[in-house]
Length: 47
Image 1 (cartoon, rainbow, N blue to C red):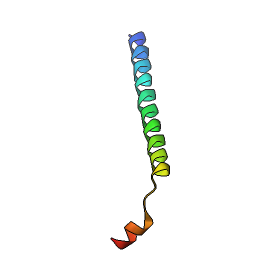
Image 2 (tube, one colour):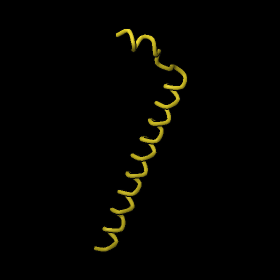
Image 3 (tube, rainbow, N blue to C red):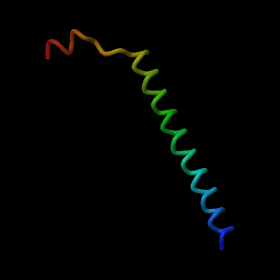
Image 4 (cartoon, rainbow, N blue to C red):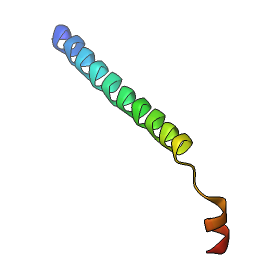
């Protein structure tokens, strides 16, 4: 019984690592895109 619980914890841990790694990759991608294509300040003020 305890071994099934330990196996399920390992599977959940792998899932959490996957979720956090995808989140970090998306955050880095958004940061990179904002640096490569900055928003124009003049367009924001005219609207």
